[in-house]
Length: 265
Image (cartoon, rainbow, N blue to C red):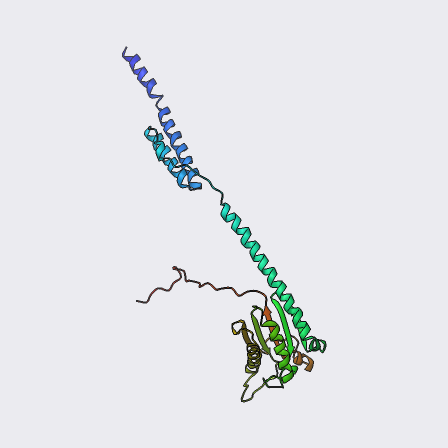
């Protein structure tokens, strides 16, 4: 009788691995459920998962009052605003292009005689319209005072531009022949003063001053080689750029905390 009882006890011990195996499978299932839930965090799902895990391991029924319903609402308002904003921007760009074409046409009309003589060129670019004027009809050599006839032509351009809202940049350019006078020590001063002279005429003719910018480039941006007289004459010019794009407001760039210099001890 003693031997049979010992044999029965050993038989019971061999079946205990099922308990450990069941615990392992349960923990493995819980691990994968948690990993899946963490892949897309949602507050409602997280609370439901927490209640379910507590109910499973404590063998109690989760309180349904603590479950948060999951409501998925498509971002209808955002989806509608984006196409509307894009459509509005496209419409504004098209309106500015149409205005720019009208401006270019009016400038061609008022400058037609000088364009036929090859003294003025009107060029359309992706930025807008550029009016390139040879300095021989504007200034005497080495001077920055406008000729009376050229001043009349500049006022005609200003009258076309005054009612618009396009930013205007006036650029002065020279050839590479050095200049050294009491008034203009170099071509930098000459080109800058010539551009400023045209700017002041535009402002006096009614163009808003906050739309005007004058820049002197000296001989740094030639359109022809300066080897021959014709090339140098072509490079002595005043360029009026009418920008079709509205100026953007800048945004201050802040230093990152990690890149900020450490205070000195």
